[in-house]
Structures are given as C-alpha cells and as structure tokens.
Length: 197
Image (cartoon, rainbow, N blue to C red; front, side, top):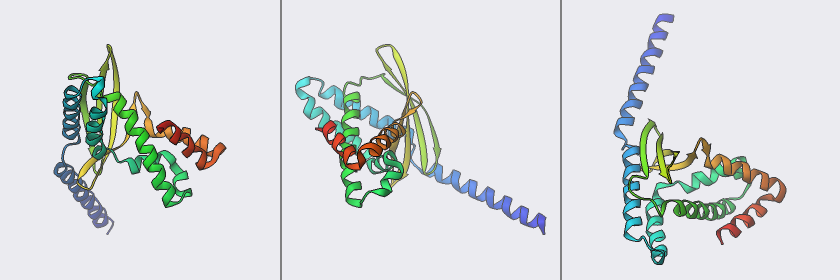
C-alpha cells in the first residue's frame, strides 16, 4: 500500500512539473518583450532628442511604459501591511499618486538612453513569475538591474526593480512605513503629492 501511494505521489509530481514546463513554454519570452520595449524606448529617444521636444518625448515614453508596469501591484507591495489598513478609495488615490511618481522617476532615467547602453543578460521563468537581468552602461560604469515580472492578462508586467541588489519596492516600503508611523497615511500622501507637484 505504501509503495502504491508513493508511486502515485511521484507520478503526480512528474505530471505537475511537466505541466508547469509546458505552461512556461507556451508563454511569451519576458526577455524578448523586454528587448522590444528597450528598442522602442531608444527609437523614441532618438526621434525626439532635443530639450524643446521633452514634453513630446516623455509623453511617447509614458505611453510605452504604462502597459509594462503593474502600478497597482507595485503600490500594494510598497505599502505592505498598511495597504489593508486604508480604504479602497485611499488605495486608488495612493496608486494614482505613487504610479505618477514612479513613472516620472523612470522616465527621467530612460529618456537619454542610447543604443548599446542596455544589455539583456538572462531571463528566469517560473510561471506566473519571471525575472529579466540587464546591465546598464553609463559613463564607463556598469549597473546591474533586474526586472521582476508577473504574467497577467496575457502579458508580462514589472512589479519590482532591483538595482545593484537593492529592491526598489522594498526600499519604498521601509521609507513609507516609517513615515506612516510618525505622520499617519495622510502625512505620506501629503509628501508624495508635494514630490509629484
């Protein structure tokens, strides 16, 4: 009886791992999607290179990156346990302001990207999650940047960015929790609005 049970468990494990592998193969490559996004960003940056074109350049880049980031998930993770302590309206308000801050910060970093500056090193896929590791070269220095992604609604979306082994969302979570302890959620929102303004 024990041998039969062990065989069933082992067989189920093989079937499940096979199904997972099959599912991973069926999904689009996050590395390929990331490469296309980088190519599109470089194209926009080269089409609108001047300071006089900054508004148009950022608008075009924003249209590119918005679908690539899961700002709701990034917002939820950045608040941690505090996310469940606020109302749905406050969650929506926070997501709007925080995503605006994230997008502006990211846009300021990528709007001057040039061909060859970003190299995609590898991808690791474990559905529905994946990570894509890249290296950014700027002014002779190399910076490793890892994009943590989740597959949802038929596409890969970034939910965290790890820069030189420091998670962006974890960093925000530590900062935000400290502010909330001292100034409550309203104090955090006031600070974020000031930054965005």
